Length: 422
Ligand code: HAM
Image 1: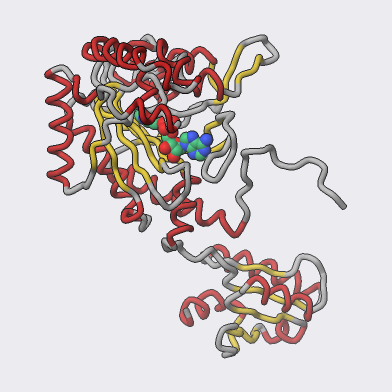
Image 2: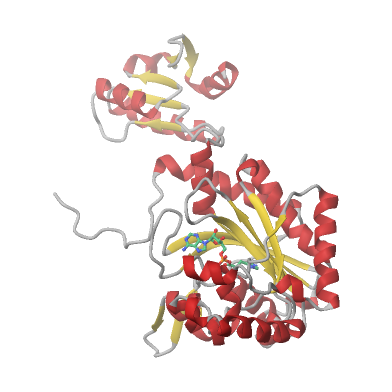
């Protein structure tokens, strides 16, 4: 027997032994989002390609190289979402959510798709937990979303393995002048740049700042940095963010080379980095994108947010031994001998489930010995054996598997007895 069709490269199955870990991380993320007053949104897995071309930006790697774009049967170009911000902005505009209470706080959890070279922590389908805030222009909002990430990492037990790096890349106003300066700097040193950087020099010179190539890093070392060329308002905003983070006791370093790979950012950008998960070290990233709602045809609304890759969060938790809750297990297994007992056991299992217990009974007609072996493999906490004698007496023996202790219990009181015994 050989499987002929395997899961596509860059995708990952979640198996039963890991699914509870995923649920735990997602539940904690939702819990923290609710504590911060965020409401959940869900948007389509695919959108019109134009949304990402305009929203994420035509010069980005995501749009140029990584999107899963195809024509549907109606000949329209659609794209599997590579991220959630553009979709959230579209949703806000399309449903006029800006007409409700502001600021608007929204969060989402869902798959994103990018055609990247798979490696540890980098997949082609990955899951993001993201949050976006609209209509909050002050530094307090930047600090608020960062604090939310900080709280989630602390609840997941990984705070000590993650560091926060922040930067400001200015607004559209101050960036023009700065980019001209940056282009001039790199043009004068073009001989030392890699091919990708040379290509990016005209379209997106900011990205040259975070090139990892050895030669480019040398050239980079003396490059003017965006945070050194901010206009008065952007500089004051950046100071305000730092002040708020200090007031909240959230540790950070300013990394003047964080520029982010998506076009919509303005002012604050940030990344939560971990050294424990290999090259794909950004566990969470985000920033401000004032102006994006207008670009996508909506009203002038400031926006900011973050997204974290949940595979990377899980990887980090596993690598650093962060605690996970126990996976759910079978509370009671009802083993049976004979058809009458099997029927009755299925009814009893139903009432045990109504009482909130995980109950299983035999549905394969196998021998008592095989059933007990199965109960053992499941790690059932209790077992009950039901045969004709037990049915006639209306009582059976309830066995606690870890201690071997047994008690005789009325068939109607199994749930109460299990709860009493703990
Ligand atoms: P991003 O930096 O492209 O930003 O992605 C955010 C996070 O998603 C990354 O830090 C990483 O944890 C995870 N991630 C990205 N690509 C992959 C991949 N191929 N495999 C596994 N995980 C990955 C955004 O997507 C922005 N929308 C974030 C944002 C929200 N900014 C403002 N609001």
